[in-house]
Structure formats: structure tokens, C-alpha cells
Image (cartoon, rainbow, N blue to C red; front, side):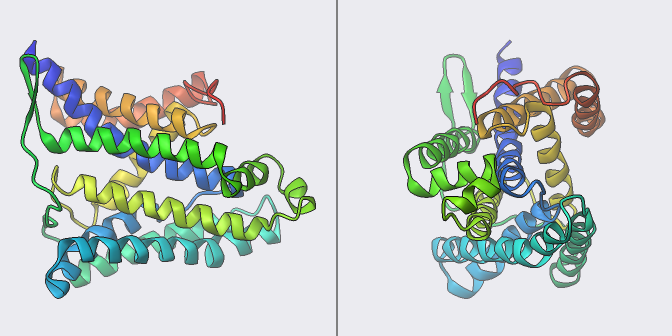
Length: 289
């Protein structure tokens, strides 16, 4: 029983990271009706940059701040160069898919050339001891991942509901034409949202770092699982997307525990296929935007 509880909490920790990816997809889709399929590879790049900048700056925290800025700016460039031109040509233009997939491939291959194909572990920003909850000892980094995920969801909801920027995002997401009539610059809102999504992605990499090694292929895997989480939970709100990630992470952990660890990755895509067929809007699509 104790081991099962540990497996569930560990799955929830990884699911929190999936959920953060799903939130970034929700934010991008809500304002542009498009997502960046390079999100996962940008996040992976954040890990490699953290390794390099820590060596250069001799300070993990300075490197962490620099990585957050660089990945946010990179996400903004993707919106301006890849997403916006395709959407302006036609709302039905799917050129942004090819553009972002091509960019993801470029980032992954370039990372392989620069850092190699061997797994690397980024430096830990903080060292945490295990936390005992009843009879179960939970790793400190697992608890940190869950806490940060929940905290980001709460902060995002406060941003959307109680700030001028948040209200502008909600109006733009609901009706871009009405937003323009209200003197809201939808292009600036979209740029801000994509940069915010990049920031969330970079934070998720900092949470991944203590739990696993990073390698160039990791971005593709986490990007797909984040998209699967958004599909399972629903793209309607950040809460539903995050819950989809938690659910997916726990399902993967239980599949590896009861069946076979090799089935873990298959669970995500099987769940996504089933949800698309049974409930295309997502399991938690009733949640408020």
C-alpha cells in the first residue's frame, strides 16, 4: 500500500509537469487558435542553456533568470515569425503547423550537435529532503513539482480575473474583433501570451531537472505528452488542462506499476485517442475559462 501511494504521488509530480505544458498550449490556443509544436523542444533547450550558463556565470540562480528571459523571448519570436503571418493569411491556414514542427526539428538537431546525444543532468537550484506524509516518504522534488504546478494555476487565474492584462487576454480569447473595438491590441496580447507560455515551459524544465536527465529527444516527448494532457483535460481552461496532466501522469505511473514500464508512453496517446473519440472537448471541459 505504501509503495502504491508513492507511485501515485510520483505520477502526480510528473503529471504536474505535463500539466504545465498543457497550460501553455491552452494559453496559446485561446488567443490564436494555434499552438507552437516547438514548445517541448524550447523547454528542452532551456535545460541545456541552464547547464551552459551555470558554467559561464558560476551561479545557478543567475543562469536560471537568464534562461527564463531567453526562452520567453524565443517564444515571442515564434509567435511573431511563425504563427502570426500564417493566421493573417487565412484563419484556415495551417502553415503554422509546418513552421513550428520544422523549428522543433531544427532546435532538436542543433542541440544534438552542440551538446551531444548523451543524457545530461542540469544543476539543482535547491536541494530538498524527503517529506514523510503518514507512512509514505515523498521526495522533496516531487512535492516541489506538485506545489509549483498548483501555484502557477492559482497565479494564472488571479492574473486573468483581477488584472487589466488578464481581462485583455480573456476578451481577445473570446472575440478578437470585439477586442479590437475595445482598443485592445490583439497582436500585443498574443505576443504576451506566447512569451508567458515560454516562461511556464522554462519553469517546467527546472522542475524536470531533479527528476530525470535531459537529452535532445526529451523535448519532443514532453511536448507530445503535454498536448495529450491538454486533449484529455480540455483546452477550455488552464485548470482543466492542468488536471488532464495530473490524470495522465498518474495513469502512466499505475500502468508501469501494475503492467509493464514499456507501456508508460503508450498510455498517454491511447488516452488521447479515446478522449478524442468519446469526449472531444476533454474530460473537464465544464470548467470555466
